[in-house]
Amino acid sequence: MEKFTRLTGVAAPLPMVNVDTDMIIPKQFLKTIQRTGLGRNLFDEMRYDDDGNENPDFVLNKPAYREAKILVAGANFGCGSSREHAPWALLDFGIRCVIAPSFADIFYNNCFKNGILPIVLPQEEVDKLLDDAERGANATITVDLEKQEISGPDGGTIPFEVDPFRKHCLLNGLDDIGLTMEKVDRIEAFEKAYAARAPWAA
Image 1 (tube, rainbow, N blue to C red):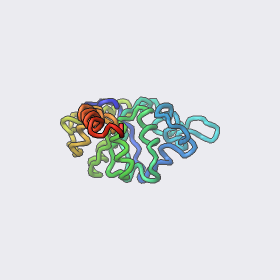
Image 2 (tube, one colour):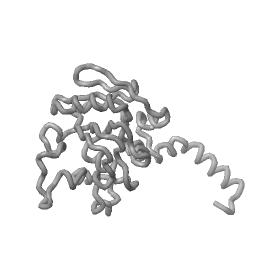
Image 3 (cartoon, rainbow, N blue to C red):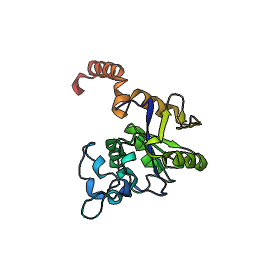
Image 4 (tube, rainbow, N blue to C red):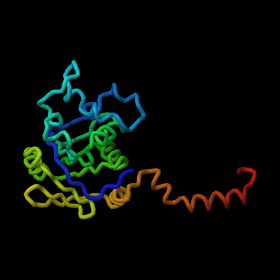
């Protein structure tokens, strides 16, 4: 998993509440187990019309936000079914951070496991960032995970909270497999000792 330390990029405003995982990546795209390629279909039903043409009014289709790395969203983001394809699609598009007043629990946990930083802020702080994001290509925001601080285009800063263990995992690029591999020496030592103690089970 790619490390998350300090991210600077354009923030895209999506001030919608209750954006569910089917809106993030519709069910017809869940057949794959590949983590790549889903970015094209992120928010598919809002980004494209029935003929597959881009909807020019959708935020991620606007020139200023096509390379957005941060999404500023409404409350209860990621609700609905517990599909891990939702953070996969965001990540494949290039979104590494989602800021909202609240998240659905399973989606929130899945973000951390896939290298995305979900940040919970009070509504008034989210409103400030939404206002910043409306500036388009000038809506550059910096998210510093080490300092737990968001810097806006005007130089103002907003602190945020994050669980220390999850922070450690993101800073070091550790998913579940990476966490296990940190203990590989102890695992191998146990296997060696167990094989000597119970050779019939080896």
